[in-house]
Image (cartoon, rainbow, N blue to C red; front, side, top):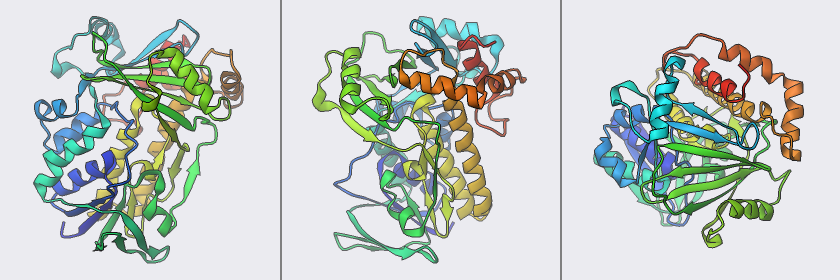
Length: 408
């Protein structure tokens, strides 16, 4: 733990990384630009975030109010099979308990805390800042607000130093790229990316909406003509947005469809995002690791983005500490990304919707990939306790989807 760590980029990924490494005893420096904003739309988490927060020593009663957080018990998918349909993906890993869990969701009540898994809804803009205040800075992380203008290094020896406009000349034993889709360090050392060709969503618009009288303890996704709308309740507002494919709908038409769903939208608050569904094939390379969006991104469906960030942090630390080689770490990360990408893809291919070109594309894709037989096989497997599987999505997760699409 005598190695020094330099994290380039703040935001959620940067501060989660800084919090974890500083809590483990490493000498951490985080440099973030005063000019570059964060993406800030990953507001829904999986139960694994509960463990991560505990690992950092974060107490729920302290940090949850700081980022307007709400307990999350499930994801509700509306209109995915056909208009008027819905199905639940909940955090109970025993299908014999689904009715009890559904009762709590319908009544907006919490079951006994020792008998359920849960995630969180968080304000992504505040979440990183919360981790900084409660963990990273308390454990000695040096915070530098400066704009990086040059990265010195190459594809053979790695990163040598990072230079800022304000005159900093920063060096470390290990460098972590949390610069998002800019990939400032990754591009310098020749990290390689592979795109998930069947996943066509590559755009999103995001905007806040006022709170409703009842703050639901679940995320809602709503299938639309060329993608889907998310709604994530916080204590102070709802985080919402439309994920779609530029191959099937224009930005303007996507905004119009979003505003049909939320007719009182202030369009000046809308944030436009462009992304590629991809994974880095060598996320730990030489003396660099990529974490967060710079390490890969699939799409926000099923709230996997922050979990992937969390897993990248844990794997990079195994390399830095000498417990795993880069070959093993990179293989583990690729396996996880592929598992998530497959799970996300099946939401589309198994849908019964054929009313637009977008949904017909996925309907035809199912015939080529035969995802129907695959999910039947996955869903028929015996339930496995959470945390005891070699893959992230368990038989129960596949069963929820199969049951929702009336496949079983």
